[in-house]
Image 1 (tube, rainbow, N blue to C red):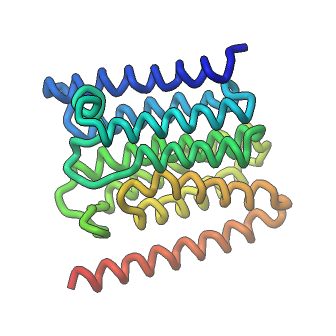
Image 2: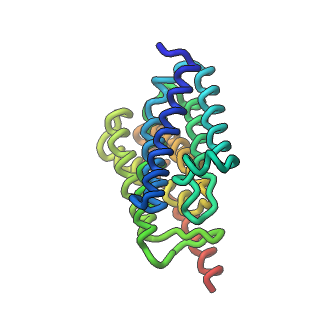
Amino acid sequence: MLSPWLTSVLFVATLAFAMAGLSACRRQGLLDAESARKCLHVGAGLLALALPWLLTHNAAVILTTVMVTGWFIAVRMCVRIRVVFGLVLHDTGRVSHGELYFTGAVLALLVLVPNDPLLYVVPILIVTLADTCAALIGTHTREPRFLRGGQGKTLEGSVAFFAVAAICTYLPALLLANATPSDALLISVTVALITTVVEAASEYGLDNLLVPLAALVSLKVLTSAAPAAVALHSLTLFGTAAFAFYCLMRIYRERAY
């Protein structure tokens, strides 16, 4: 078993190596800004999936979080570091603190559900894969449908987010929660809808924190309910998400006109 210090150093070193490589690809024009950022996003998410099995002590969790946060802040603040490592994060032309929010989300999950694979894996998968698909599809869509703080969210991107989030929830619910196929489908659709609304309403990278937490709460409510109550809880959460989506659309229309 590796010491907490060595585990943390190896994790940050892997992250820094990926950032340097993707920044070099961006500098050479091999990747556009959004694709480079999302490649890092996916890589960091896949690394995060292994953390509960790598960081088995609280000291390792805290140390790794502090080191990763310190590294991201150094990339933001130090010009020389940012030139080599930071192009992958800060070349998209928009304000985002997503990497810091993502670190906070992983820490929250490690602390809240360290021994529950379903409640840890699904939120990480959603924020990693669904968010990436939504961003890449939304980037190639001309007209934004949701506008908050000058940052565009597209209908096409939200549909992609919903579809991928549902898949990321259905299979783990079926395999890890021992849910029936019908209950797993109900859970996946509900969680996907809630996280899609949260993602559409978030700005400045805050979805990297709020989406995993929304997925965690939704999954906790649905998977801890009795089988007969799953439909009722899903309906309640579904209605809440639908109302939030309606309010979001009203806000957008008022701003548009």
